[in-house]
Image: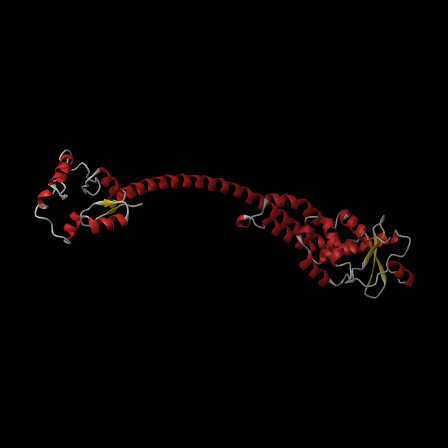
Length: 343
């Protein structure tokens, strides 16, 4: 609880009620306030050192013995030079002395500023060292990303260079494979075969827009990270089924990788080694789109848009298998056979 000083006689009290009681009843204070007239001998009963008045001379003498025995500045405030009547009064005064609080605040502020500057200096040093290490690591990662992007660009260039050659080879391989099969390899149009295969809708390998839209909107990172196996799952779910979920493309000979489908004329055609299907996918841009998806995934959430080296390492193998699907499609065909085989 804060102490209270009387504004008339400077007497100190612990509570406001004690102060009010003093101002209303203490005769010497009432005299100072001018509320009562002092007795004729009151002036004679005032202490010459502290100017405190007493009702009797006897009380004054008792007081003077104490007051005269000490130095006048014994209870002087070192902050505001105010002189108090007792040690307790000085203690009470120091609790609320504004000059003392100002000095303490200045000293505390000076100490706090010094500590803050020291902390800031250490923090700046730590930040500089951390930034240097981080910049070095980012430079190394950027080198790896540049290398990876260069490889991807090389894949794109290979796709462009081999595309025409592969189309010519496709036709030649189809003819060679068809000759090796006992039954006719181009068209089977009898009703019995149609019913056994139960292919109710046609599949048009000339309609690139259909698969282009599917590749753009439905091919995702889960397919790409699974390599050729993921592409097989994608094409079966997105292209080789009708709206009711019925297969439009079925494997009739798993040992020789022979697949059948119904063309736009309602005729049953063969696709040996899934060559037509693979060419259909490549022409529609599935390689390029897989590279774009892989690149976006490797950069997702990374600082400054650089690729995450861990993600890149995960994606290298699947990307290589997708890029070489026209030369080596074994993984793609195994998954395709498992998903389209006729019981």
